Image (cartoon, rainbow, N blue to C red; front, side, top):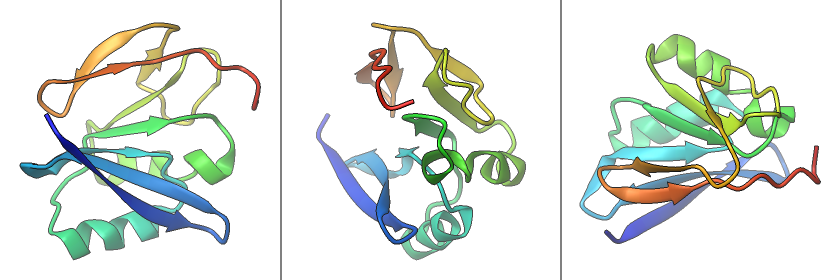
Amino acid sequence: NLCNVIVIPMFDDNFCYYIHRQDDIQNGVFIDVAEEDVVYQFLKEFGITSMTNVYTTHKHYDHSDGNLPCQAKFPGMKVWGGQYDNIPGCTNPVKDNMEWEAMGGVKVKGFHTPCHT
């Protein structure tokens, strides 16, 4: 399962990432959606029709401000984030060493890293 990572600039000094399997750009995951309008433009440019999963590394606005607006636009969108971090819109709290499948079989493992917040 080879994946591609597309870097999406956010604000003047930050980034969001879109990770997808090479054979399926439609079903990727976003990491750290801070500006929903920038993400909507990205979706339009790449012909991606929905957002299903957002991973948020921590609660600060420059990593999480787009979560709630994106959930409103894409009902059922999951937001994954650390169980202790009060991530806006979090539907799937991640515990230390928790594992799950993403993007049709790509294994993901979350780690509790409490230093930034």
